[in-house]
Image (cartoon, rainbow, N blue to C red):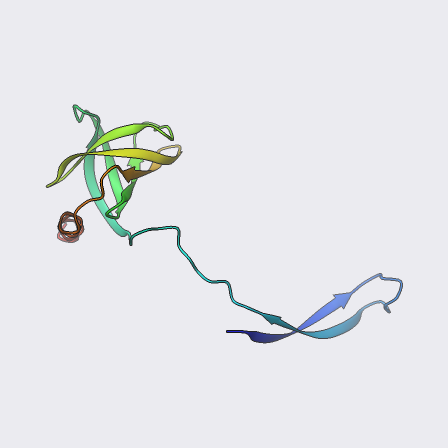
Length: 128
């Protein structure tokens, strides 16, 4: 949907315009479409999970989708590495670190979570 906007532009020291003259003009613009990069909706959660095949490292899932999660960790993770993530009620899943910034990281599950498992995790978090 196009919209018209009247805008005032104050022009200062230009040779061909008097100082402090205000010029009115109309501009047509198209609002930017909000397209998310996400393949599936994310849900805010607070789930204590473990990282590693032996599950020795603790972390917290702070948002979750069927395709991945955002993690808060106590040690830095490196982009491009694969991890084992032990999720409540599901067990271990393999995920790849897609981005990492200090002690927060985003991971993508190698195999998407079944929708029932996702809903159970989101519902489990809502009860706490």
